[in-house]
Amino acid sequence: MERDVLIFKSSFIEFYRSQESKVQQKIEFVLDLIRHERAVPAKFFKRLHNTQGLYEVRVITPQKSIRILGFLDEGNLVVLTNGFIKKTQKTPRREIEKAKRLRDEYYNSQKER
Image (tube, rainbow, N blue to C red; front, side, top):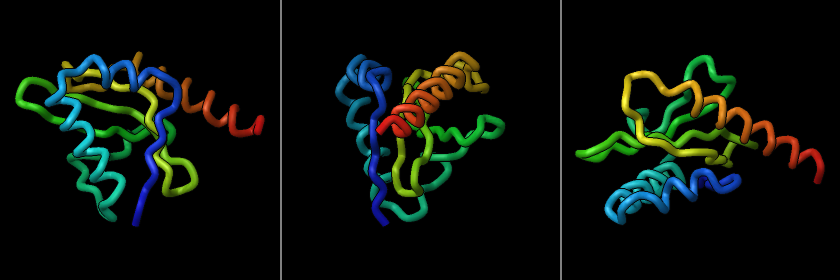
């Protein structure tokens, strides 16, 4: 099973570019898992509870825990919205709200097509 990964708007790209190259490689490794593995382990990709369908991509490095938020569209399309370094147990509400806003913008732009 192949999944397509789409990056919506620039928030995730800006975050990705701000990371050092070893971290970028780790992010790419996890995104490749999501693209190509039928059953992606939850330690890398899981649905967030109480967020109306948001998912988090989890990238763990020795120095930091990186999260990339997004959602599924049409089953095999993973749409990435924003990334951040997680500093506490809870996902920051600000990041969840940003992902929801970008998801809504994405669906509105799809309707206009």
